[in-house]
Length: 195
Ligand code: AMP
Image (cartoon, rainbow, N blue to C red):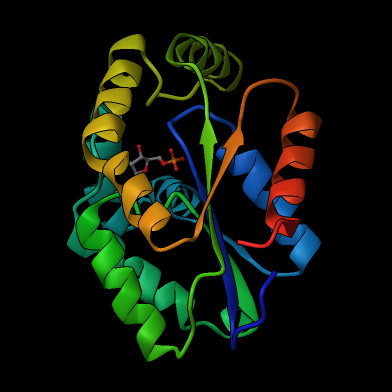
């Protein structure tokens, strides 16, 4: 990874592309925390906190939690001490408004992103993976209707971010299909290429 005051990278990709799994492997490798907005929301839902109560209705419907709520949560998280030496954001930013807010947070922290990893995948296979996961984990947010809505929201609100980060020279596109280990190797190989 390129040196900056705080190394930062984040993987994103369509729902179901295995980004959570990959995020944890990459973060462990670089000895930095993996900050997953989805995990934080799920923990708050489980703990029935006010944030969880607010987030749940959006998550259950396959919608994004409003930017203001999500941005405030990420800002608080990035200010914790364990993020001082770098961090990996999993599932954030997902909207253009979040990109702007993240830019401002990074400015305030005197930090910058080193890479933006996007995992690419086939839509039909993604839906199959999500249905399988819903079956295994019993996730309430993973009915077929909700899964389709999440894909649509991703296409409308998150896909445009790919062009933004490509323009900035930060984008690392990795084929997210196949075995978890194979995808991990592809990600590490791509991160080692000079941008
Ligand atoms: P994930 O596990 O990353 O797919 O996130 C699960 C759900 O949490 C998403 O479907 C959204 O409802 C919500 N969520 C996670 N990250 C964000 C974000 N950056 N902006 C808005 N909502 C989010």
